[in-house]
Length: 168
Image (tube, one colour):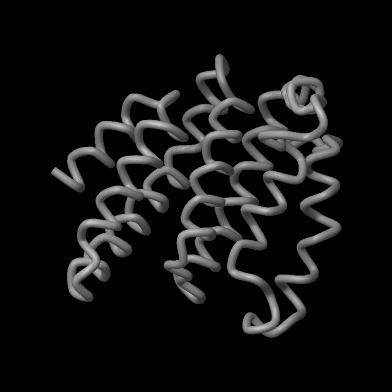
């Protein structure tokens, strides 16, 4: 029997979910999902970011898995239905993924739940790179992906390797 997810993270996701469920996709910003994650797990917030992360890390493994699965569902929707290749969206996705990696760190089952989102991220960045090559922007795309790989996602060897292979 599945237990109820009582985490604050889940509560926020559920309160914001109707926006995606009820509004036309054109009304919702393409970085909505990433902003939701970064709102709960900020990279900077007046010096409180570590405290906020630690508070969220208290979620049970089951709650973390549930939260990741729900976020992945919405991320998949945004990436496939409303692919936004602007730098701000790509960077926000990268930052959100970094924070989620930190959120589940040290819990193998929760870390495993990120696999689908990581795959979605790599697929999206591959799409971005291919489109950039087609449009003669290989230099900027390569620079951006290297930045995401070596600066933002430096905490995940697998992602860093896949991103670096993409642009090599």
